[in-house]
Length: 106
Image: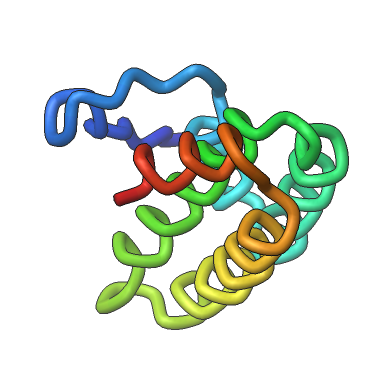
């Protein structure tokens, strides 16, 4: 089982604070249901932690782009999950939490 590396720190200087990239990379080896189950567990457990929510959005965004041309099914799943998570963040984060989200994701 191959687990891809997330080179976000090298590319953008952001140091990951979760294992979300690895969690989704492992799930990918088991298919669509595993990706969705991983998302549901992560989202439900960490949606109220603005830093983890921010990183979840970043992971989903990077995953969707990594599959954009090579695996349209995974790309579409990650797109849908990203849109759901981003909408949740935009609707629920306020003040300093929103500022953090905006600064880190842009």
